[in-house]
Image (cartoon, rainbow, N blue to C red; front, side, top):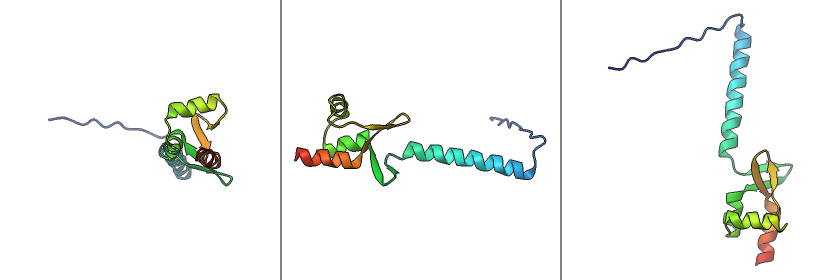
Length: 99
């Protein structure tokens, strides 16, 4: 039989309203983190961005090809933090030129 050990956290000198605010901020941060992890398409000031994998699928190329195109200035991505994103309009324009 396993015995579960519970740890107790004691909070001192915190009002009810302060505790509620701390919890709200923690939940908000976690929700934003989860949203960022799961979200691959971004909308920013009426511009839609696609992830590398979405762009590769749409253009029927590999991500290595996208890297080569970036080096040759054929299709240059934007970077938001550590994310590499492509403007949907530029991707569609590239798709039109390829057809």
